[in-house]
Image (cartoon, rainbow, N blue to C red; front, side, top):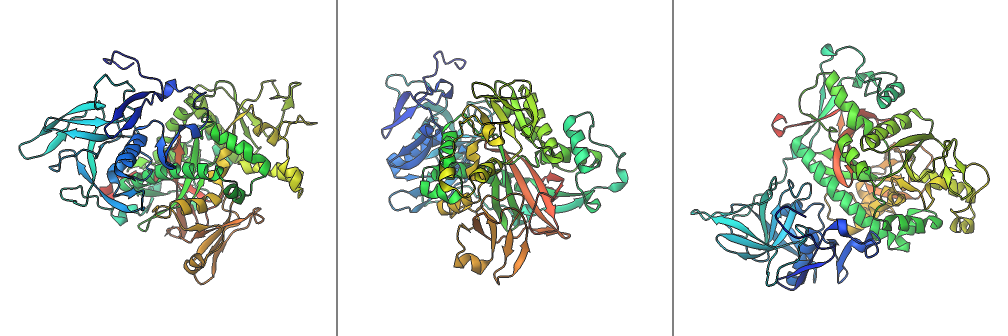
Length: 629
């Protein structure tokens, strides 16, 4: 119950009131959601006439549903409510026409009008997401709105709006709306109109601010040799792996770092949030279609388990990594590593300590928030017993595992590390326990899901019927295998099984078909088109990893680069050729990390080759104010 309200919020999904235009407003009190009524992830999706409105019962869902019902148009799916302020068009459903949308800042002399959208920035009550409401009435001293996901209270008899907000109309004709929430800010309002008079100037970012800058630390001020704390398990393991206190393997890169503008970081954050939302939409789209799912080359026996994993709304993804090209040409996505354990420690800890050791004080550490974000995500993960961390006897996997273990333990989770499947055994009841007899119920793994699926494929060889009828619930002779652990119904695995879909390169072709106007996406197909061949393309296996079996071909059919690997048997994706920017003989890729679906940090990888692989360098990245560019 909120202070001063005097009554408890209504149960999730309860009718609060009916907005002008006949659109219901529902409670979004998620704490009271009944899992019997909302058992799956899909049950939280809102559709009207087959058109996706958003997720029940968020502010964005209501705004789109109100506009659809009363105006016949909707705005595009956006990651955060505050992003609406930067949209330029809405889409009319009847003919798919784009209608102009203009933004007016709080204090504008162009007053809001009934039916427009009032937008709050992120912060305070609306941390991370911002907020949107529909304006219903405008007076000189107040404005009235309808909205969802604020107080979850049933309207009083005769109530005609969700809230009345005080406003001031100045002698100069400026209209200012007061924000009653501490730490929050009203950006302004957006109106669907052909008249752009007095609208906000939403100029594009200056291209040069998207360029990276190569810099070097002053080698003469290095203070001693050791700078990672050998008393910390993850740092000691990292030093062992790197054979010393260093971030880069090559001596020529020991003092090198890169700088990123504040504007570029903001654009990367927006791209990361937007693309994560689009990947989730595309994942749902794929899992609704056997025809699409068949293109992902996954064993049919696993399909029901993937769908069950996706339907379980508690089976959430903790973190993933996007790979981008960043330059004055724009931000372009190569792929989403939604099932990867690599580069987190380098981003979230080592690059910051490197800057401290070499006294690099300009700008800020691009990964400074990653560890805290991981800790918060694990705190909300629902893990309530021992979490088993599964890894191989591999130095790189060891420091990855220990870094993530430190975030889990900071969140209050008890962890145990298992090397391979050593010490695992069956109980009489069919459960799997570790060497100490602790049942395995929660797992975080360093392996990709494809590693487990390879075990199934190897067992079934070329027997399609055996592969289709594969049983996961059979207690087998001998020690449990990896697949026996990870695909059990009573084991919750991070990252979840459904991340096989967004991690598979086939999703890029699906995304291109769904969002061909998205500025971050490259033309991607499952068959080489004439258009791609004419522009140049990249061919890569749909379930490949670490830059293996990738070919870069230019418009004249010249092979610019080709890597070897073990994924040559995989079906291929063909993606528009978009070369990485290069600096002093190194091609540079920017990686952003999502945690709970939001941008949480950025790092940089470099390689003399045009293809970034598992052996590519991770170099420090700093974020500078735009004025320093």
